[in-house]
Image 1 (cartoon, protein in one colour):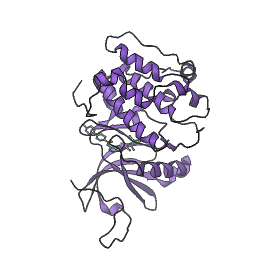
Image 2 (tube, rainbow, N blue to C red):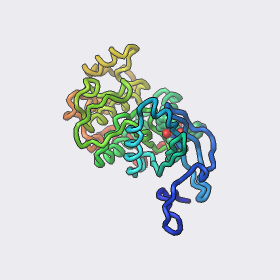
Image 3 (spheres, rainbow, N blue to C red):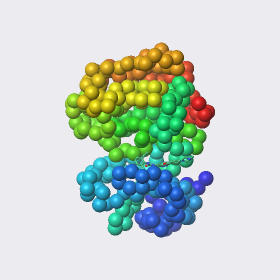
Image 4 (cartoon, rainbow, N blue to C red):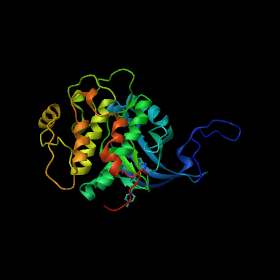
Length: 288
Ligand SMILES: CCc1cccc(CC)c1NC(=O)n1cc2c(c1)/C(=N\C(=O)c1ccc(N3CCN(C)CC3)cc1)N=N2
């Protein structure tokens, strides 16, 4: 398999930048607030990547420069099977280009829409992969803060990849910035209090619930009501035979207001529901 040489050391060790001319652009993969993502092939090596374009004028409009710089610094430094690789970046007069790993499966949120909800095997496999990825991020002092289905991709083997580090931060000190969508915010973030990596543990509980029930646990028409339910940890489990007591136990141990009392990432991987149902390979391409 050809490998993309991120630093692109030339033969003579001469370091030269990537440019658009190095790539053959393929189909449009997705569209975001700042630009589009295309399938692309690096001409020399034949390596297939996802090329994310960000319009510089959009950065000005949303004052996003610092976010993007942090996103690039953080994601370039990460190497984990469940974290989408950012190999390198370059820019031209109008755009910034991120050379990203291509996840050929699909977006996870669309799969969740199609299936309505996931089986316990599929949900636990994704939660285990996310937990291992977060353990790696937290080891590197990185808090993602914006883990939601829209930021998760699947590769061809059905392995989960965390993408979009736009809200990630290096967490030495406690953080105070408000970010992410309402449904996934931990109480301490809703209250704009100082927060740390434990916010990602809370989010794992929200995602586990959403994977099994098809909707996030505190979802309400009105945003104010969502905030109130998060602050009260007003957690309800609709009666259904498809969600086991162990699953509810794990969710209840993550959606805990006191961030120091949330189940640790290590304890999640040892939880009976994960041990019993999660596929050790991290991929589950069965259709259910
Ligand atoms: C600009 C788009 C955007 C905005 C915001 C956040 C994110 C991260 C998820 C992104 N995407 C992003 O950065 N992305 C980086 C990526 C990436 C997106 C990607 N793949 C896909 O998006 C994709 C979509 C559908 C697909 N299917 C193939 C089989 N078909 C049957 C169904 C369709 C196959 C792959 N690989 N690296």
